[in-house]
Length: 84
Image (cartoon, rainbow, N blue to C red; front, side, top):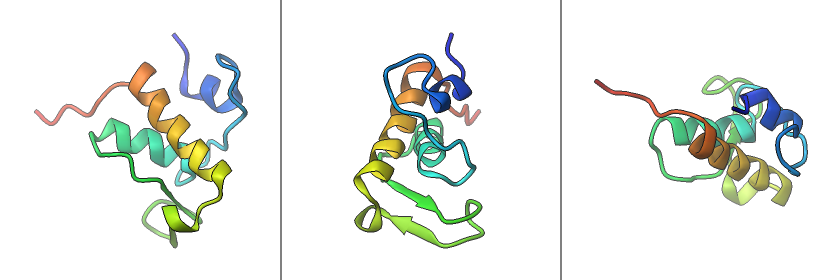
């Protein structure tokens, strides 16, 4: 099974490498999927919740692609938060 870092490093697909930084677009996409949230491309300039949030309308196409790749990665290989 592929790991999070495999996806970040592009080791299991033809996808480009993605920044693994907590709060980055790939991380936020994976987190939204994990927590059962809808796709809503965004990321944080620094740490999640402790820095400025960049919304979809301010993101570059590459940042949106990274967010969507993180979301899809978690949908395919990750789990989901169990609220029980």
